[in-house]
Length: 545
Image (cartoon, rainbow, N blue to C red; front, side):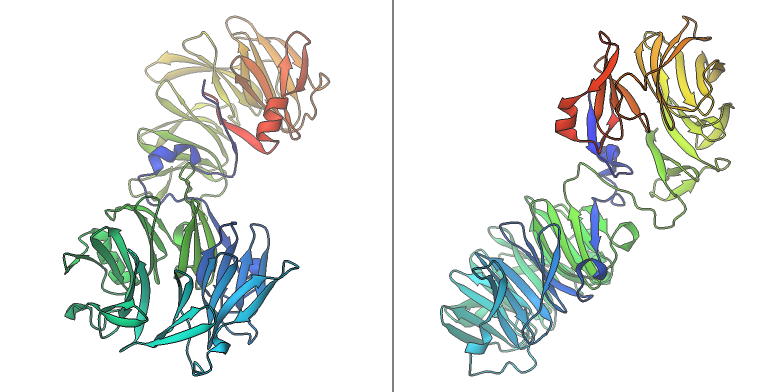
């Protein structure tokens, strides 16, 4: 038996293998807005330190995040921070007419030291510093007009022949993209020609990356991406390249053994494989608060986005994927099932499915609270406020009028009999073949029973929808109940909202406070410390088969 336990806030996570091929399903996204970090709207750049700290270049200063608390560090002149880089024990920043670094003092408080102030031959009139690179023991700051190399106690200015669009560190070289003079190489404190194709003139080159030992990958804002190989420039022949021309590519990086991350101005973030096939597309429709990506960085399976309005943290661990309904029609989702290559959802507003384009579709006639979805003998059933429906070809047929269909479990060692918890107690389903079912009520117990677990073929445990846990015995034909025993005084820590499971022939309970198990020798319920220590009280089981 396979047991899957999670600390849960999911919609479609257990369908991860199926969803991975569908870009509309995305990793978990945590958005941070102004009310969370108490600074400006715009976040121009993001960096991470080896200790896991996250630093963001914000329009109000430098933001630092330790995983719990955001803290704003304002520049001495209260100006915008355009770029940030964390290395060793320093956080370098580029600002308006200013650059330098933050470093903790003996009290552990970040304090700022200006580097630009020591460069007396230039006042940096109207210059913003947009990029920072580390070169050996020196730090390179880039504005649109020049490079400034800070080494020990000296700063050298390297003037460019035309506007500098970007700088990139590739295969040990510093390549500088200019507006009119192509790509230059920064070498020995000077700029020398590296490559200049007439096509690149007046093109905004965002990044230059080495995707192999002898091939460069060049991204532009409005003209897509290019490969530079054997001294020749050629367009990147992928469908997504046309998308970038429309949505204005702004940022790029390579992560996780060749996967690619593309940030756009108009349509969020694209994550692709090395061939350009979309793995995920993140935008306002599926989780981001903003579509304009100003900066990004990946660190230990986490993607951090600096946006025109807010910050986002994306979990790149694809064990769990999410579907976001921005229409608001879906409501709260109570169960999900994959049936005949379709995704079905039971929600408080009815039953839905996702079509081939992953659009949400409502199943007519299913209005109302839908509780559960079960695939039984290759048939899909939905427990509903109105009763239990069979779903076939995206249509429903009522097969049980006993209201409030909850858990539906197969009777052990019985080929065609199932028992369901409902608003009015237990109901028996017997498969008569050809899609026909006989449904009858197991009398005596009429309170709402939500979760079921069989101890053997004639004994089951049932958890009340609100309060209580019962051990129930049936006759061999499942026509009636022989006994119902309340176990609230048998050691159960709390009888509110109890869940019950059969795990490797053990009856396990999840209460509001802890995990517990039934000891048949003592006829008592005891704490299950192994689960409590490993999973904690917030975890639940989403699959026990």
